[in-house]
Image 1 (cartoon, one colour):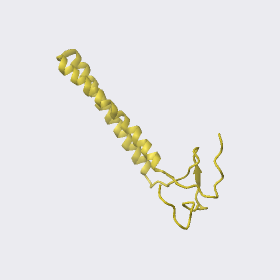
Image 2: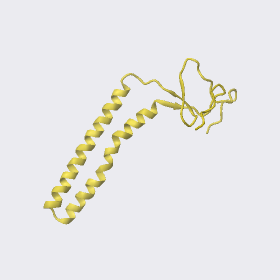
Image 3: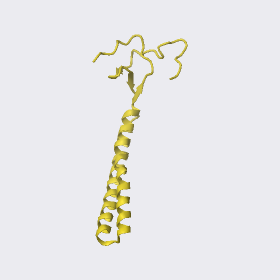
Image 4: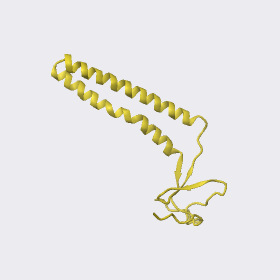
Length: 121
C-alpha cells in the first residue's frame, strides 16, 4: 500500500462532479469512461476467441473419437490427451470479458472523510 499524499491524509479528494460508488466491502470506486468502440472491440475479440476455441476443441475431440476407433492405442491415447489439453481454451473468452469489465472500475485505496460509513450486514 502506498503512502498517501502528505497534504491529504485520506489519499484523494472526492470530485463533486463525479459519481463514486461504494462496494459491499466498503471500498469506494469510480467507473472510468471507455473510449468509443472499446466495448465492441472487446466483445468481438472475445467472440473470435470463443469461436476459435470451440473449433479447436471440436476438431481435437473428433480426432480423438476417430483415433479411438481406428488408430492404435498409443495414438488414441495421445489424441485423447490432446483433446483434454485444449479444453482450457474455452476459458479465454470469459476471461477476456471479465478483464474488460474490471478495467472500467478504479478502486480507491482510502475512504475519504465525506463518505458515510459502510452498511452493516
